[in-house]
Length: 142
Length: 142
DNA sequence: TCTAGTGTACTAGTTTTCTAGTACAATTCA
DNA sequence: TGAATTGTACTAGAAAACTAGTACACTAGA
Image: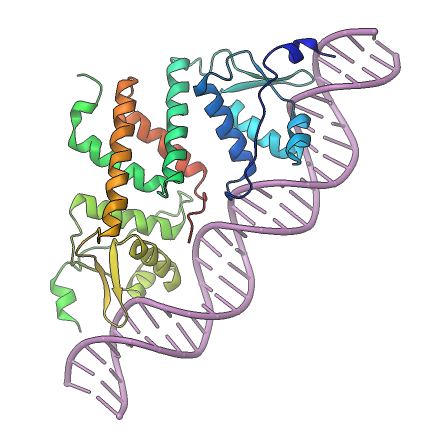
């Protein structure tokens, strides 16, 4: 028994809302993003195993894999076959990982809010584009 | 021959980029939005007819209809069977005004938060664009 | 080595999305 | 009224998205 996994941040659990029509794998991704921005998950934390999530939510392991894989591609987490899945220590070594990670989290949250309020992402993006064009002051101080 | 349509803002034309993988109907919607924000299209302007667009772009009339219909639902344009499709005089007829105002408020708040966190609006917009392209579904209630 | 626990790969079925085919209905104008 | 022009409705097929079934491979620990 991996007591490490048990004693640490194993508390994290996924939820599922089938009434929204939002794909399961995307809900998982969003929840990881949200947990990251909320500080519930931190670098090095272990995520529940593919099978564990599959059993808990009564879904197929591959659906969990898909979510984990996308997050891994973005550098959000790392997977180690036979060991487990963990929040990456450094999200994106390319640039300032922390900064980019927060930007992702912010974008995800914004997207979720817009959707919940009945707006398409496209609509929001257009308004933001207008704002950007209107007030160059909102840009990086130059 | 409707010389009215000919002499007025009939200049507007749709384009199509099949290499992007973005659905045709969506490209049409985006182009109307872009033309509106760019001032190329203005309230009262007539859009090319469903059939005209279908012929020009070698697509099915119903694909054009779908784009026009979504824009109509949002109050962007009005259609009149047997007459044509026009940019709505008032983009925000009463109740839609409330909706748009809230969108503006949301956009403003988002912009403020991004700025406070040290991101440019451009950065956020780019991430949102990625999110949009990743999940074009999200299913807006119809 | 052996076993338990982990992620992975391949394939397939179902659902949703997107586009098309075809016929119908409303409007305008001579 | 009747023809031409416009948008609309219904149906269906192809493609993509999403999830599932099943077997395999890697890792850690006894």
